[in-house]
Each structure stands twice: as structure tokens, then as C-alpha cells.
Image 1 (cartoon, helix red, strand yellow):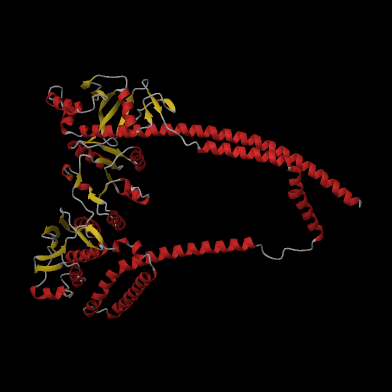
Image 2 (tube, one colour; image 1 turned 30 degrees about the horizontal axis):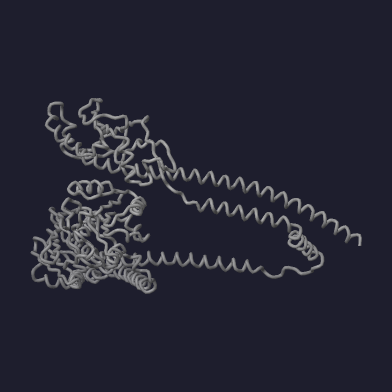
Length: 636
């Protein structure tokens, strides 16, 4: 009985202490919550300030980039370069031309220009100086502007109208306002050590822009804080009334049950908890997935290796009977032949198993997928690779046209490499040369491979085309297969040879132009051009093209800036020109619907997946080498 009373007293004290601890905890929670919410409020305010600053920075970056692109066109002009490099007397004949060029700039924005040479001498002045300016370095590598590697002997001081500069920022970023109704105001320094494409050696530091930004930040965050705080205080008031009952029911009684169980229960934990079994199952699933991923990658590598090994192994197997017939080392050659056959059987099995078991084989081996590509670009790449291991020869390559065909690139490459090998092996004279030409005739592209080798006897010409090997003219491997391959493309392979003079292989392949390829870009007077790329060459070329038209055009080095500008502006007829990285981003994010037409600029023919996307979305592609003034054609 005494023990029971003692236990009850202990529980009463414990209950009292718990109530005191909980009350203190609640008070501390209120204080911590207040500090937390105050901190969140200050952080949110600071983030808003950074948002305003970021809006102005992006607009300023785009404005300076557009201006610097125009300066780059002038700096690359031969008359401008001659003016800089001439003496005081001889440069006068270029003065009028240079002055007329600068007069084409917006006189409201650019009030004056001054050019300084390496000895700090003023060699050109236009307009009036202002207190708002930047001094950019003019650096040349040869006769081309190059701010990274060029010599910076001259500089250009550009004087701006600060009010007009602010107005131009407003045009690029509508949240930058010129009236008093603004959310945030601050002084802004627009100039730095970088002015678009140029480096800036100095700039005005006292005359800052007084920028006003009107930008409504979402108020849901503040509302949610107030709501959460209200709920917390309401629950606190209610819980205070029922605190004793809650502690008794939810804390004291469970503790008593646990205590009784520890003393009275003889139950022991004899089974493994369920969550451990679930955890082990999860670990097994993850390990199985990782193992499958490794096996998939190993299968892909094995399949590609087997595919590459098949051609040379087949060639060796084809000539082995001929070598055994004319060689005294029969036993050694028989052993070698057995090893080669073992390798052939192994690679064939790997290639067969891989193609049968891997459902993703084609997606991994994209070069085996038929697609559109340009013959001349493929041949140039093949010759460059072929030279590395076959350098004892002169290669004369004339592939200047643009001929589209439709086939698997790896099949054409393997076939042409075999033909080049045959030509190379036939060369024995000191004047070793292989000539490769491509021309377009009617609806075909004609590839001509001509060597200065031994040539083929007239009576053996037909047999060689059927695959017969002639010892002194190369192995002839794959010629019959090459003929069948080009016939499968609705083309042909013809062989002409004169013993002692050389052999000419003439290949004919039908042209197949993709529906998404364009040689011209049509536009109307209402077309707005968006150039989204970080390739300085492409931007410079478009600047030259746009000298001939008056349409609106905007340049962006980031896709986010272009999409943001479009959403804030009514732009019914936007024509987007971009490069591969940004095009992939546009299609993945489904942002292409806001553009009327999209043109992808490519160095070479697009890869297989991009070609499928272009065809499915009715987009177009143009080559980088096509960027000339004639690429645009107006629709009246």
C-alpha cells in the first residue's frame, strides 16, 4: 500500500513538472516563431531587392550586347581599319565614310564618339561629349576583332544620353519605369569592365542612373505566414484550457502502461520488425536496378566493338586461303586461321545476341539509323580520319556542293573506307595520290575516287567487281558488297581502270532533300526576328544580314530572357533563329508554340533525334555556312 501511494505521489509530481515544462516550451515556441517569421520577412524583402536588381542587369546586358554587336560591324569594316592604321594625311580620305557610319546610330542615345590611338592621341571625333560614357578597347587579331587574343592599340569612347539610355532599358524591360509609381528605386551603374563583346578600360563613375522598378511580388507568402501564425495562436489558446486532460490522457497513462509492461510482461521480441523486411526488399530492388544498368552499358559497348571488328575479320578470312596456297608455313597459317575463325565466331555471337536482346540498340547506336545527311561533310570527315593512319599519300579533295542523301551514315562510311583502302594498297609509285571529287548531276550526287596505282588488267576487271583478289593490286575486299550497297540506294558503282595508270571508282547516289531543310527564310514586313544563341559569329553574321531590312530584331544569349520578353509583349509574328542547345531546351519545355516559325542553325546535318523533332513539329534547319544577305526573301 505504501509503495502504491509513493508511486501515485511520484506520478503527481511528474505530471506537475511536465505541465511546467510544456508551458515553458510553448512560451519559447512563441518567441522562436516570432523570430522565425521576422527573419523570413527580412529575407523575402532582400530577395525582392535582388529580383529588382536582376531585372535591370538583364536589360542592361541585352542593350549593351546589341550596341556592341553594331560597334563590332563597324570595327570589322575595311575602311575603318584603314583609317586606324593610316597617317594623319592619308586617313582623311576615309573620314567622310567613317563619319557617315557613326551618323546612322540613334542620335538621341549616342551623343558622340571619340577614337584614341595607342599614344593617347585623338584621331576621330563625332558629336559632343557627355558625363555618361564608356571607353571600349578595339583589339585586332589580323584584320578581325578579337578581344581575347588581339592587340589592343586603339580605343573608342562612346558618349550616351543617360535619360535616353534609361528609356532604352525600359523598352527591353517594361518593369523599369520612368514615372514615380514604382516599387523600388535605386542608383545603378550600367558600365563595367565588360561592354557586350568588348572590354572597357574606363567609364563614368559619378553620373549614375536613377532607376525605378515597378514589380509586384506575390503576396501569397505573407498571407501564408499570417495564416499559419493565426492557426498557431488559436490552437495555443484552445490547448491551454485542455492542457491537463491532454497530458493525463496522452502522456501519463501511456507512461504508466509502459512501466507496468516492463515489470509484468514476460513477452520477448522474437520476430524481426516489419520495417526491416521492407527496407531489405528496397535495397534488393535498388541493387537489381543498378546491376541491370551496368549490364545494359556492357552490352552496348560489346555490340559496338563486335560491329567494328566484323569488317576487318571478314577481310582476313577472305584472303587466308590465298595466303596458305602461296606460303610454305602451312601449319602456322592453319593455327592462325583457327584463331581468326574463333574470333569471328565470338564477335558474330556477341553482335547477334546484342541485337536480339537489347531493345534499345538503335537508340544507343544512332549512326546505324538511316537519316538525312550531307555527303560532302561526311566525306571530308572520312578523309581526315583516313589520313591519320595512311599518311604516305597526297589527298586531293574537291567537295564544295551540298548534297543531301538518306541512308545510315555508318554504312556509307564503312563502304567508302573499304574503297579507299583498296586505292591506297594499289599505290606503289613515288607519286602517290588519291583524288576524291563530288558533283551534282540531274537528281544525283556523283562521287569519284581516283588513284595512281597499278591499275587492273582489262581481262580481270569483271572478276574484280565480283570480289576476286589480285595480289599486286590490293585485296579487292568488299567491292562486290559495295556495288550491292549502292544499288540498294537506287544508285550504282562503276569501275574504270588502266593497267599501270590507276583506277577510277564512280559512285552515283540519288539526292534526297529533307522537308525541313531550307536555303532561304521568308518573312513579311510584320515579322519580328528573335536571334537566340551564344555563338558570337552567328550574331555578327545576322547583324550584317539585318543591315538590309527594317524589321524589328532582338538578340538573346539565354532562352529565359527571350521567353520572358515575349510573354510581356504582344508579338503576333515571331520568327526564331537559334542553335542546337537552345532548340533542345525549347522542345523539351514545349515553348515552341509561341513562335510562328523556328529555324535551327547547324554546323553539320542534325543528328537522328533532332531530325525527328524537326519533322514532327514542322520546324526548319539551315547551315551555318548559308548565313549571307541572300538567305532572306520577303513575302509581299
